[in-house]
Length: 343
Image 1 (cartoon, rainbow, N blue to C red):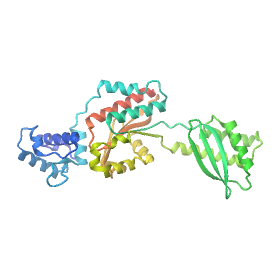
Image 2: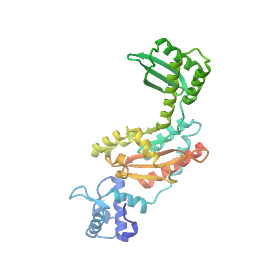
Image 3: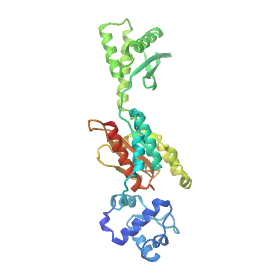
Image 4: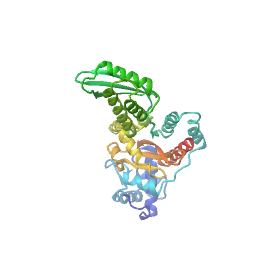
């Protein structure tokens, strides 16, 4: 936790704000001569104040001859106590809203996340409302040692393969028969609905199908359905924005961040942590364990459905050197626009 902004003198607060503003704009350490161009103090006086700020853990310097840069603690203090957020420009607001017009929910989420990524120059991320897959086709490929490869095709075009154990004596003919049955009779149902329908048909003996194979499929469909409930629906756009000219000076950090972005489940869990709040959540560097190594920031806000309940979270991921005053209101407006779209 950073100290309250009220514990800084007016002079310390002014110089600290100038250092952070300049650093966020340039990405380079800020020296006393640069600050002297903006405040009515000598470089020597400014260096003294900078030293006090460094002793408080708000500034640091990369090496002995460099100027100062804010620490993560300093950035948190700046965001919470000094930053003056700017309302997104009208053209930006209109662009965000226009990207969702006439699109399905998933298309709107992909489109607006891409737009947010481009406007913020970060990676855009969103968790989508969970929607259970509806069955389109089911087939089995027999394997050795009483196993088979189950191939499930959803009506959204998704394909999932799983190796399943087979009851003793299950023939290739029985597998083909139950696969054909599921495709013909259960297509269009959610996986949980398909499992219930299949079990009911087994009990009523409506179909001349192998009961053991049918029970195997019913259990498998139920498992797939439960897995789908736990599986995050995550959309990431604009990772390329993280590799710009300034990134060449810190390629290891960028490489680490891109590697972290591959862990979609962890990202989804992180975004879920922003579901409870009303406003924008900001995680700076090591405040979030997932991005501690790359020193990245996450800005996120939940959006709601027609019933007012939170159905997802949208945000951006980028370096700690973000223009927070610009990006935070942008994420805030996008979440509100999504809520209006979902209502």
